[in-house]
Amino acid sequence: MTMVDRLMTSGGEIVAARVALNLDPERFESILCSTRASEAANVRRAEEAGVRVLTLNRRSRLDVAKWGPLLELLHRERVDILHAHKFGSNAWAAVLGRLARVPVIVAHEHTWAYSGQPLRRFIDRELIGRSADVFLAVSPEDRRRMIDFERIDSTKVRYVPNGIPAMAAGDGMALRRSLDANSTTPLIGTVCALRPQKALEVLLAATAMLVVERPDLRVVIVGEGPERIRLERLSEELGLAATVEFLGSRTQEELPDILAAIDIVVSSSSFEGMPLAVIEWMAAGKAIVATNVGGVPALIADGVDGLLVEPGDPHQLAEAIARLLRDADLRSALGASAALRQRRTFDLHHMVSSLESLYEALYWTSPRGRREARGTTDGTRF
Image (tube, rainbow, N blue to C red; front, side):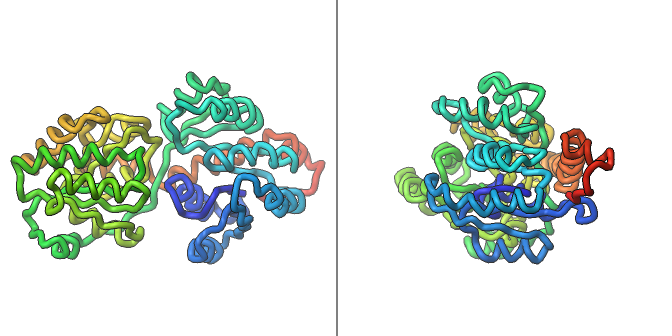
């Protein structure tokens, strides 16, 4: 069973659902548990792929009674492996999984800032870290922080890189036409949730510097979130109303065309785990400028697969973007290298295969798995 807050809503939940939907059906029976209400289309997509979905419709942290159907299912169907994603699900899986005597509990953290929340660090270490059989990190840096900062048992913390499915080629001219931009207009952009972590004010400040040299520059910000109003106001204050376009939310199907239109893709985040967006930009063969935070250096080697800059520094960000705007050959070389690295290391097939092997190894060394291997129980299919 894969346990998430909502299906296909944020990066970590998208990863979780993709893995659940792509497990080998000859070896695993897959169930998705959405602890809160999910969009009907996402539930339908999972069910059409042959994955059962249990929706608990919890409305708050205090909605404890809604956990009953999950606990009943774990008992009734003798679930062998419970794989939870992100803090809330990790904590509840640690409790409910042990109550239901699930043989294997896998906790999966998809990043956080690791500061200012001593209670969360305590729960990660004393509840999740002790109850889970393995605690997965999405980057080497996250693994280091979980061990050094949270003091979780290092033997339990493993790094499994995120992966994405193959991306279709896109046609960028439709977006350029909508922006009244021709094929030679320099276009930079980003695709992200508009929340404080993404530090988009740094990108806007860098843009204000860049337009002095390149007044024809256009910037697109794709995504929605609580920061949008503030960022739109800041854009106007910086005199960027004619330069920056906020495109709002777009579907996954629209992403290839959007990326095809953009010359340089930018991540200005103050912290990250292993961002799916950056992996998607790599897959599209784009020139990338990103902040040197979290798992990003595990994705991009500076000067090889993209350019890395320090977070919170609009001058350094502007300089890196300007360098790429002047050098089309460098943009092409970095994009080609990024695409190759993505295919070799950050592919969904590689990720699913790694997790399948981990599930089997953990199960067959659990007490239930050892009894089954000896033939002392009736066989339990994954």
